[in-house]
Length: 450
Ligand code: FCB
Image (cartoon, rainbow, N blue to C red; front, side, top):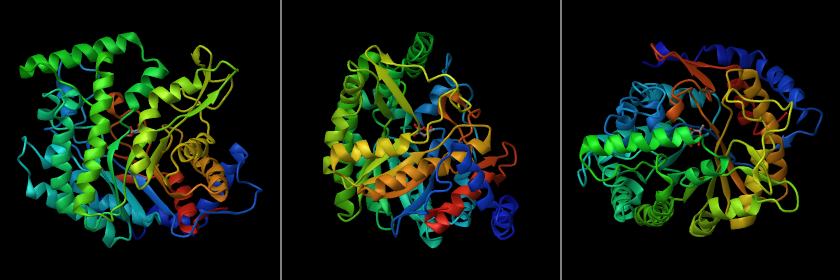
């Protein structure tokens, strides 16, 4: 299976690495952004975790018992296309771990699919728990510290059909699932996170979603509820505005109880939550920046104070004046989605979260959606150089996990956006590392920037 899809021993990636290709690409990359090149070699702390991330629904395929599978097929739907086979990582996870190892990484982040583990309320699948245990042990066998996200957006369809996270019983349902999963899996896990980006909807709300999109979302949720004959179908990232407070309350209590359940299974296992943090920059004296920060992150920056670490996920900056977010400045480099490429945002986001919480940080996601891999190759070292400076300045950052290992199903946008270090053939599922993977591998192996 492994050799059919990814030649670990004699892959083009390895060959290019041996020929010094990575160094050349990294240099060109650094020169492009004017970062790292010419500056002293920037080292990362000993034992720093270098990883790549995936999420179940985005790569496994055929996640048919999940809320999103249902929403992808209802009419109308907000999803550009269904997730289908995704990258077939449910079968090919060993290939994925082999790639991570071949890149010289020492950690791997992935998520459990709750809807496979608990297909009906209170009914747990030992076979599925064993499946995830094999992946966790597969990480260990390859020298990859397994970072496990207990819930990355998707929930079982039955959970969504009971009102999802807005249901007052949601936190105890999540607690029961975490308790059962942790009892089976916690032993060999290196780091656990309860939830992924639970404040994303408020963040998107500040970015200003098009009203037409919100109308389709609302019609999609109504159609799902109607076809299942339930009062309300609610999903982590598809929820109407009036549900935001209930959603946040459910997530906050869910995180607290989930953490408790995981800790009960293994008290020494580091547990946190991954937060979506934009580098928010104030423009002008009356900027609404702090209002945004209070609304989006406020409750979470309090909630994580009892956690072992905070997962920071950053993709961009936002400039905010007295009216709200500003468009990107003219002439800046842009990614495939048209957003500004701004490498310094990661270090700023990390610094902000540490200042606010005092907790150690793991960058659990950071990456670039682009069809031009040279942009990614340039972006990685350009973002890591200021991160190294922040670490040298005293912020405890334990690791950097790149989003993502493979091009995959990017939620409502389908398969069009490409965030992967590897491309994936949609018919054969063959994975092919891109040149940016070499750049990242060279940094991880050296534990330093050239
Ligand atoms: C993050 C999500 C991740 C992926 C990246 C591009 O918000 O956590 O699943 O979609 O964005």
